[in-house]
Image (spheres, rainbow, N blue to C red):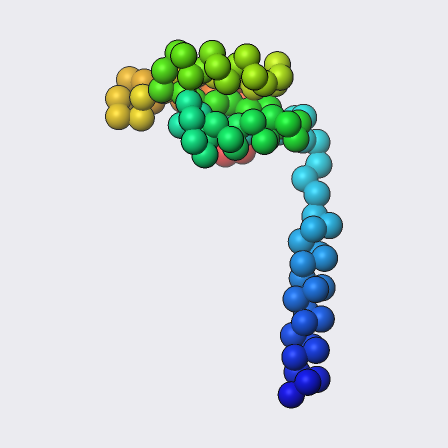
Length: 107
């Protein structure tokens, strides 16, 4: 029984070590699109990813939320106004993201 538990612990440690070694290359060339960045989880995630060097495309519902986020972050973070309940707003945000990312986005 002890040998089984030791083997499970060793596999857990090996898996964790392997996961922590994985690194995403070229972070400054990566884009991430986040909705709901006025406050809450979206706001916090945008700040954290910007701090790690990714290009953050942050969608906010209000201009005040977008401005507050822009002032607190680096020049890599860009904002767009998006109301996810409005089809026209979604189409405009989609076109904006495509313009920002260009042909570097994954299909």
